[in-house]
Length: 390
Ligand code: P1T
Image (cartoon, rainbow, N blue to C red; front, side, top):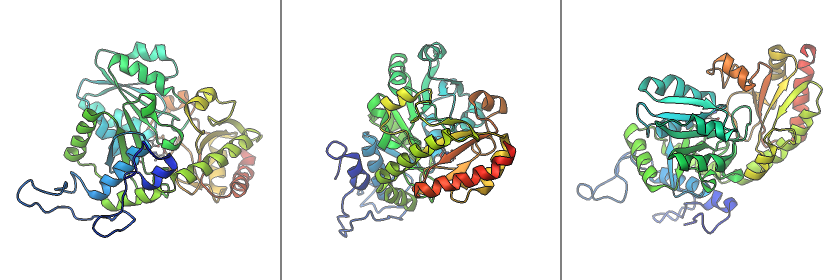
């Protein structure tokens, strides 16, 4: 079986945690649909007893993602939000979490609308200022949660600095690596305790599966996460697990293409007279550019930009593009465009959105793997339609 110690990431995308099926010789992972597994007398089985507790196809996906993140344990969930909630179930009422101020709207909603009522406290903070983060740590602070690059303003936070702080204060440091993928950044190697993904995005890459995953190298955390996975039950289906394994095989080439096209598109947008501001960590103008260059192997496939003319211009733009389909989500082979203020981040109060720079004119692009000349022409189509509102 391929392991993270002896193969490059590009190879692990295809072979990580996998081997030919010993029963049939099948090269591709079999999809085991059975929900229950025969026991040769109570408790005597081949490693699986019930589908929620474990499944051979899911196990292979978990091993593959763990190998890509350089971790020893992968734990898969039925969605990215399911993974987030399950990690937060490691905490108890009265515990406090420090969360990066810019996170996916659904992640904010889990803290604000779901777990708050069970007594979990959260402070949302710009993690760029380490002293400020340190000052926010309370006796009941147990976890530090960050997205980097963040969704949707593409802030970059210093994972190693946050991990050092976390170790000092005995916090579990969780990094949502959805935007970067392990191809561009491996948070565990930088000291994080848990990496979480919406595998719905780049890991699967084809916009046809909703799935989440957590990875850790900490045996005790893994045991607790496996317990929550089994006990709370937000588990993915064997078929979805197979599809993500299949999608992972092309992760390296997809991410390469997305980064190359996004880099060109971001520079092109920056020179456009209908664009007030471009947020892309690969641009020298990005406030965290130097940190991104140090921490990441590429700036990713996500770009946010502020269109002159506010919502009327955004509306015209998003109706006019043909390849950049107006839709939530990201990380698929097809390009997508969306309006965070009214779509992915609508659950964040308007005041907080404004403070974060999620204005009514902000558009978020997920750059796919189509030809870049077609993508640029498509964006020009959007700009032409929005011109009247600038
Ligand atoms: O959609 P789901 O698989 O449950 O994943 C949630 C999630 C977690 N973390 C990040 C960074 C995310 O971006 C997401 C989901 N995001 C979108 C659907 C979106 O369009 O931003």
